[in-house]
Image (cartoon, rainbow, N blue to C red; front, top):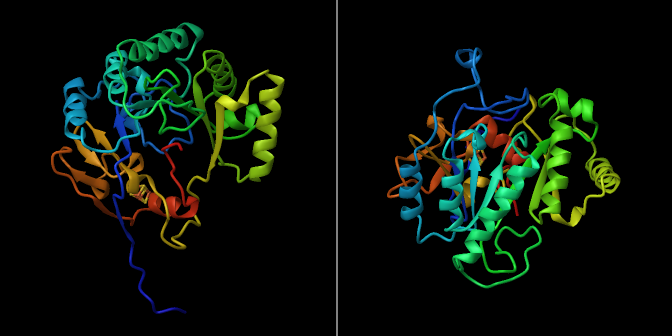
Length: 304
Ligand code: SF4
């Protein structure tokens, strides 16, 4: 038996590339069984919780981070598209850099996707240009080929089999996600399909099956990046410090302050400060979530 005492690693903010904004902590129209957010019994009666972040808070954060090397702002939640000022917030953030919408896909019908394409194009028309103009692929650091900032989408499933996936998400999630990916692809949006490997599947099997599904659905999968993440399991422990975590390259803004990463949003263990005027650049990685990061050794939320 080893007598050594485990010391949690301290992760420093290496470069501030990713600003996550929690638009709502608890408001979600679905509430998947596999979600890391604890919705609690208080919210069991209704899914409508009025805990939306204010637009002023977001404006302040964008101003305070104006000298940071931001690649992307991530609109997260619970479900970010339930925010009543979602369109205003999206336009505001797109003026600063690329935006990734992390959504359960249920609001992504063709009408909404067409509208979002128009919003993205407004940025080009009003000449929002920073850095070089390049073609984009799914590289979050790049603007689109017309020089405007882009909207990305991050959707998630748990299995390539519809019924198995829906068991850990919500009924109809798989079908809606594939439909949304197909429609987003038709409108030339770049998307990330995050496969939360809840069932401990072999990664090759996951890629092969999604490539098959995309082919069957006639989806040009060059617009879709597939990522596999390994959610937390009971046997998780810290094997070694991670090389790359979300807290090394970003922070999350919540209505009541700044936190290390989306896992630790509103959790005192991840508290970094009250605003981006003065916030901590270090975090002690001591939570079960941090063990999950150590196992994945890569971003759990950011893309690219
Ligand atoms: S959960 Fe991961 S990203 Fe968040 S503070 Fe811990 S190590 Fe960093």
